[in-house]
Amino acid sequence: MAVAPRARPQDFFTDAQWQALTARSSWRGLWLIAHCWGVIALAIAMGVLWPMTIPLAVLIVGARQLGLFILMHDAAHAVLHRNRRVNDWVGEWLCSPTITAYRPYHLQHHRFVQQTEDPDLVLSAPFPITRASLWRKVARDLTGQTFWKQRFGHYGEALRARPAGTPWAPVLRAELRKDRRFLIANGLGLAAFSVAGLGWAWVLMWLLPMATWLPLVSRVRNIAEHALIAQNEADPLRQARTTHAGWVERALVAPYWVNYHCEHHMFTAIPCWNLPKAHRLLRDGGVLPRLATEPGYAALLRRAAPA
Image 1: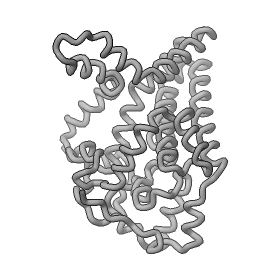
Image 2: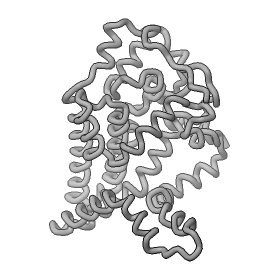
Image 3: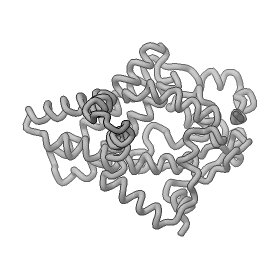
Image 4: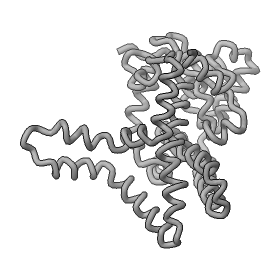
């Protein structure tokens, strides 16, 4: 297997700069998790108080659901908290329970980024695509089809793959065990909101964003990060893309500095909150023109689906 070439921090930063960029914090990651859940709570409260704002709440909550995944991603890199046990606990219990399975998969992606062995290569390899194909994907995301396939598609796959004559009930129970935390957490959430007479709010402003806006912004993020990047790219400054984002994009599409993806791939030891600082240092050092960058998400999608 060909390991992807890596950037050397000493070629871009002084020792003092590198120490500052990679310093772990005991509070910053916890604050970001609290911020993420706080924004979700405020958005849902806004929709309850002023139902006309529910469409906006769906966008905000869906983006922060992505935000929880991004913070879990930092925990997978062990940079969300100074203490490793705390890092893993908050990543699993306050961000996403998928961290245990996600970590080895994701570290393989970093080790072989854009190489043949990259498990995420399937996400970027098809691009560019036609605009009609992109709109079909958008439609599947916004109608819940993508969510249903990703979240529950494994039930049908397991049932179809069972040997002939095998009872379906044990297979179904095994698949349900895989989803037990997701089902229990959302069942408890719905029950708690229903007791307060707000079951509809849980459905419209938690489950609906999860089934619609979250799949769409996750797709946009995947496209922005690696689509149109050359396979087997040897230059570590061009194995991922940084996409410039204004405040609207940061609020609704790319929370918690996820748009600085080139810097993240170059230097995985940097916590997400220091990626903008790394970007500025690279700019001040005259390195920025060598990076794969895009002026915005709309411009990137136009290149990914030109016609």
